[in-house]
Length: 400
Ligand SMILES: *Cc1c(COP(=O)(O)O)cnc(C)c1O
Image 1 (cartoon, helix red, strand yellow):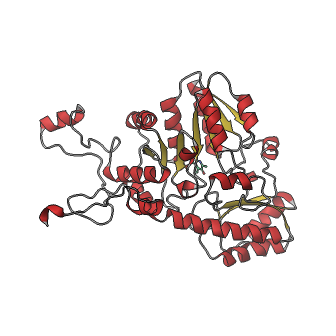
Image 2 (cartoon, protein in one colour; image 1 turned 30 degrees about the vertical axis):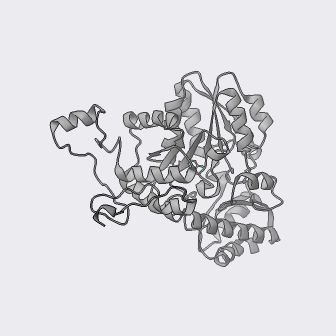
Image 3 (spheres, protein in one colour; image 1 turned 180 degrees about the vertical axis):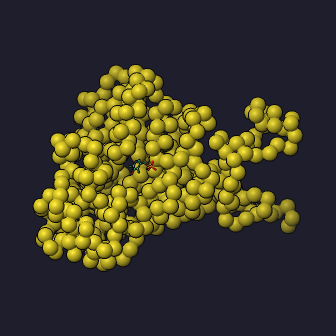
């Protein structure tokens, strides 16, 4: 049987759960069962001639970990399999995934059309740094496909959105926006951080590029930063070029952590979603809660659309209390278990006051237009027992 040894899995036709634990795994000659962590900045060559051949591109091989690293490659191949992407490029953070994509694929004079309510740092990146490249950004209402169409300019080369939105759970029609982008010869870029590929696969809905902050649900345990851009190879090779020359590459340690995160992503997203659904129902019944924003609720305006493009509603919800900032802060400060932090996608439940943290850079008018009132609280449900999360929120709510 010596010729018949098989160390690696064959994954033709394998389903999501199988790919999540096995895709991308390349074993070394040590036949390790788990994924190896290649903590090395560079690689040796067998001879000067081999070095020349690999540098010259005549022979495949690793040169330097800013270019390629086997552990990072495993993470890229696994995430690509889960998103249904031809190629994935891992980056040091979600922000560097977005910036590298823009730097790689747009030119001075191009125009980006973005949904209004996006991650705060993305907003700052657009206004302060992307603008320096001579690229203008305009903002439109995520939900309003006609508004997207009306705002398109002859030089619009990218439509950028996050869906569902943070924290109101508004949903953009990815299929319709993909058609718009295609007609305009623009790229549709979806930041899929809130759903992860376990709940939404934008490339299959027609998007050209998916962006991840792997820092959130992909790691899932608040340990390290990472990001990714995914799409067709012809586009991703340009992003690879930026990584090689600009340097926002993912570290092999972080890639190893993220690889492990992908193995449990689907069961975690299911548990996050179940907790959020239960919490949304509980909050809806609570006499001191004014409104609840969770697309899993049939009363949410985006519920039906969400069902056509997501297989779950995710772990993040918003709710509003009467009494503005003071009341919202009281609810937060009365908790004893959940973490007061702006992060999300962690095994630990986090609670945030968007108006004074994640959305504090907006003017009051912009905030109210985006639906971020002073009484709004965001909860990113973790994996604790739901009754403990509810009890923790009940202390402050009872006293309003
Ligand atoms: C956190 C986040 C980012 C940025 O990711 P980092 O890994 O923190 O750089 C981008 N988009 C969304 C939606 C996020 O939540």
